[in-house]
Each structure stands twice: as structure tokens, then as C-alpha cells.
Image 1 (cartoon, one colour):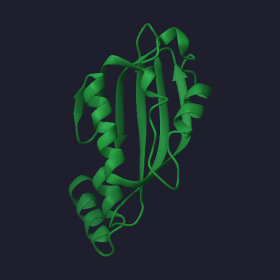
Image 2 (cartoon, rainbow, N blue to C red):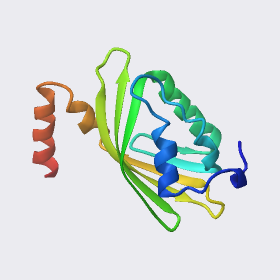
Image 3 (cartoon, rainbow, N blue to C red):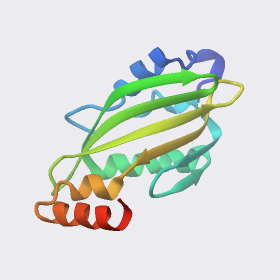
Length: 150
């Protein structure tokens, strides 16, 4: 991995540039250029899992690459304050037998004193976004959620 002194500082512009070239509409994502921005002690958490350490994080990214036929991310908003970077996004994934499905979410990156990402927390409604793509079931799911939680 590159030493942090060789990396550009993670600013709003750097994040937009680097994360935008990670994903594409027609093919597998390539995260290799952003991995050096992650600290060896990265803690990643999302709706499904919590992962500690760079090697387990890299393995998770590789599993997602293997499973997806294509993956595209559109960055909507990127903001930075002190050592926190927030971004809102739309991620569209397609798997082998299923149509492309958009997922809406946000990511919080926490930087350590060296400017590397020490924590990444992804927020999204996995089931709601998946169920929205299933005819008839989507209406039942939303009705259930509104009745129980809204």
C-alpha cells in the first residue's frame, strides 16, 4: 500500500474524483486506487455487517465484485467538516439473473490524524430498495412498514 505522504489529501474534490472512477455502468467496480486511503485498522459497518481490519475489508470488496455483474455509483452530495466526510449516493447493482436495482444511501468516512479512513459507516435501506423492484410485493411491504412503523 502507498504511504500516506504519497496520497493526495481526502477533500471533497478528491473523494468525488476517486470514488466516481471506482464504479462504472458496464462492468465490475475497481477499488484498487482508493484502498491506499484506508487505514490498516479500518472499521467498516453497514446494514449487513461489521468488519474490522484492512484485509477483511478488502476481502469483502472482492466478494461484492465477484457477485455483481455490474455496479454503478452516482455521488449526489459530498461534504467534509474537520475529519468527517459525508456522501449521499445512488448505487445501482445488477446480479447474474436479476435486473439492475438502485439503492439509495449515504456514507460517513472518519479520518484519522494521518488523513486515512479509520471508519466507514454506510447507511441504506437494503430491503426496501430491493423490495421496490418486486411487482405487487413492493406495495404489501410498504403497507406493512407504514402500519408498523409509520
